[in-house]
Length: 626
Image (cartoon, rainbow, N blue to C red; front, top):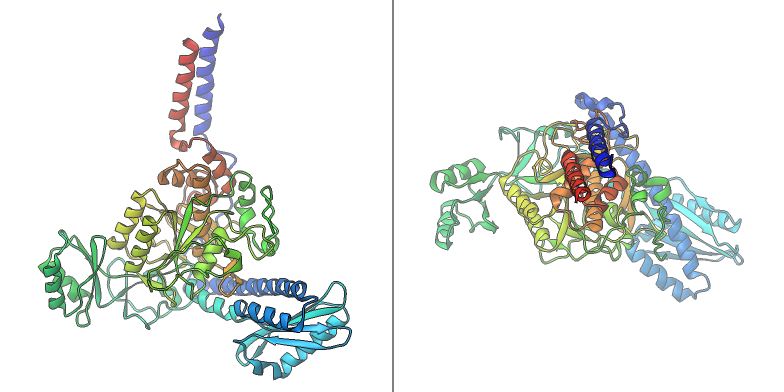
């Protein structure tokens, strides 16, 4: 038999074996027992689990604060050693302006016992006369003179929480002591009580709000954090309208006269009207009766769904908090994935959120100018902390010896501020932020926010971005409910729920058939305003892991469409729970290395691979027969 005659049946047989193998369940996927959260918990159980998660976040943030403060003290000692008194004063003044939590710094001369004290310009100097602070600083000075480090327990003074820390110099000639404010703990607790829905949110305040059941739009009252899972919030005297034919200026004036209001705000094809005299039901009756629009819906609110020179070959970064606290990166095979790609500055990730701390040293050079939808004349600074934390997960500087490591080394973050200082925003602002990002070069958009009601207005904006080949990623929510959350549940959006460090679904994480994948979301360490760091929990923290992965994929293979990127991320996972897709884990937890490995070559979704292989086989046979 000739070589060609026996090779052809052999190839056909081999193809048959491979096709059968592809249809069998993979043995490489990791399956874990379904966690205890797969059954519906009573409100008290859920509240206790969330309070436990909050306690973990606060404990982790306390430790992050102390590690960061020790590094700051060592930095001060290096910079000031040998400097004059005036140089020391100027340096500490500049440092305390950007690091306001360093309330007081003391330079200790061990040989003569003298101490120079530098208090921040915004600090309360009266605190230094408090007995507890005087006692702790004295103990710190004694330790330094004995060439020992010092760290006090936290203590309360005049409503604030503080600790004292000190380090001696390596040569034993001097030392630095610091009084450190832990205001960040209060900020994290306040933020996470909202983010984990431990309290009714949002409360009445800046906005005139109605709470409704998202399915029926019947009024409901939100009395506890647990009630949030069945509630969506909208402005009671506003309406979003998309007309069949856009009104001209005369018709807009007619509407304004009828409603006793200003002409509507327009975004794309959609208008938002505000009335001081009519509620939503009355507004809807008016537009339905007189204008027959394509849709007229409430103007919903969206809330946060939180929580040295570079060495090119480094997969274990030297960032201070990485080894002890960033369990999330090894868990997703991110370090291993860096061997394939560390990202590209040309692939921009828009963070549609509360803004970003544009001055944070661990985000230096990583943040673009962005846009402030809430106050267009101002820069998109973060006055909540949520957006800064999200941005750090994606793109905090890697291998710079400070703070945390982001998942990408080079991808830039575009901050789009659509949520105000309360952590909430409107359908209009979120939609405007998405459209702005789509029109200004974003390749990936992260949406760590949500609501339980569908809004055609927002969906139009999402379709607009999706049609521009953008990957949209969103958090599912933190109410431990199967109810679909939006925008995550829209078909154009990649929905992300949260796992903990044991690769179980986090106790707070929403679930459902619409969930695509899981990512770490429990006590995630990242950047925080005021040049600080915090550990937060929430699907808000899980979502940017996936946005970063999408950016890495688009960096290694720019030719992939948004649909191909999303399919690839679903196919390249660590399978959890029931084999394949299930409502508790989606397809599984993201695997950065596996996804980037698949993205290196022309990507073919698994379901099409038999046909793809058959085509390749036919091509080979044709060559053999030629």
